[in-house]
Length: 394
Ligand code: NAD
Ligand code: MG
Image (cartoon, rainbow, N blue to C red; front, side, top):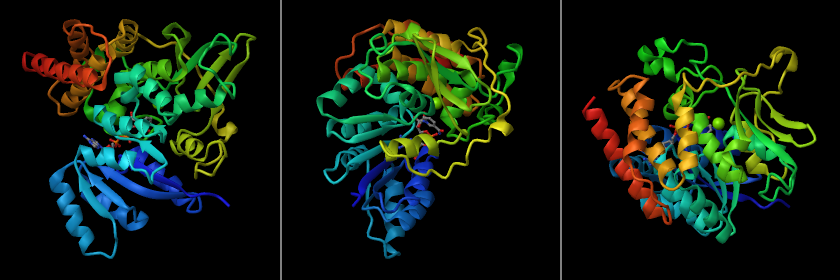
């Protein structure tokens, strides 16, 4: 008989959160939704409560949680409503939970994701920002508390699937020569450098292949997403930066590859739908249905590969620089990027100001070692303040 896994979904109202619930709904014999969480989308989380009847629903925002609680009172659902960051940590570390989908966007996800690792959960990691900000201490925490980490990001999930079964964290002894991290190139892959100055948030968010949240969509347009993913791959697979090569692949069918010393290249392919990596991680080591349609090779017909253009997409180079510098620099990069994306989305600055702001923040923040989560949060706060200052002087 199968044991039913109890899952907390951090960020259930987002794009990854909804795809996760879609996979859960296909397997009521395997998964039970223990808790769902959101920032402040009351309407969506209420309908999720009605459908999945979790034990807890957490809203970060106090007022939204009060609205949700009173809406739930008018139904016969028994879901308990909580609010605040401590409650997010509580449902991520609750003794009755075995699996946590970490799908909050941005630095806001770091504390509950840490709470899940600290209590030895199976952590399904979509929130790449946690690894970017705090890679070393997070990976140490996972080891120390015997948590299990499975990557949800499609590229990292593909790499995971293409690695040897018992990969020991050493590329050389595993006979691996390189990790080939694919990137769609985003909506501006073919745009001229000059035209980028005037692109709008709507154009930046219109990703050619993937349907995602706003922040990651802008990150894909600047290629910062790939930069964050290089850092993510570095920590997940203990891969030195010079062994991680970004390959532009506009069809988004090959989700990434692992190249071996004998010349073999192992890839994972599929339609661009996040339910595949989600179902892979949720069912692991078994394979379960995800609702994703079968890949039609005749429809795909062509697989193209190109070199990335570092001059058109300076964010990619900035991420490699932050990784090389180490310490608090990736956290500074991430924080500056979050403010830059938010400011661009609010039309307070141009698309091309995004790398300019990040570069400025990385130049003025002093490099320091990161030993604790507090060190990370200190850099995060300072980098945000510096980014706001830069914007005010624009
Ligand atoms: P989204 O914007 O669609 O959803 C974000 C979720 O986080 C929502 O549920 C929202 O309520 C919650 N949230 C936002 N701010 C919060 C805060 N301050 N405190 C608590 N909760 C908050 O984002 P998404 O596209 O689902 O991405 C989620 C994460 O997964 C990101 O880290 C992203 O990089 C990663 N990811 C997403 C995709 C994708 O296809 N969408 C692919 C790979 C990785
Ligand atoms: Mg990705």
